[in-house]
Length: 206
Image (cartoon, rainbow, N blue to C red):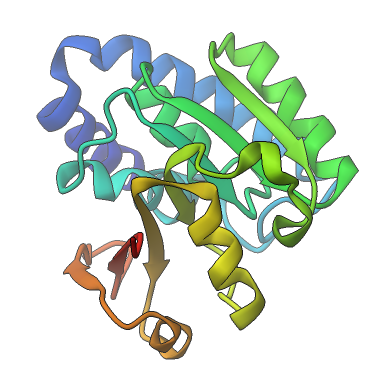
């Protein structure tokens, strides 16, 4: 059921590229589950079947509501490449940077990118707050699926964005950290096989 639900989403939104996308995700799943045995990239309690919904479908749900075409995207706290790699797979003209502070995880991300033959997809080993000035005003979108937004992150994220850039946070029921931002748009992207899900969009303050 989980894979079928994912397939249905791909058929609805990316029908002309359905076969290629599914092959890429099948390969991604194979690599991710194998590498996850060595380094804890995602919860090891998640069954292989559940990856299709809990991780892959969840990562790409926003594409039904947001235009990512030709955007420079920073995936903050990427871990196993989620949600950055799934978004890159379904929207290949994006330029995606996967940010994680742990070298072991980033080494695996590099391996995944190479094996999936993804172009314009890069890694950065750093804490967000330590990114230097060359990255300021660089990104169209910062996505974050698994990191609680601390006060120290707020100003740095804004500096990294272009003047019309946006922060997009994947949230469930806990929305306490979004109080840091005065103005935001909250979109309900809940799904029966994923549960309560919100996409919080914060525009850069000029």
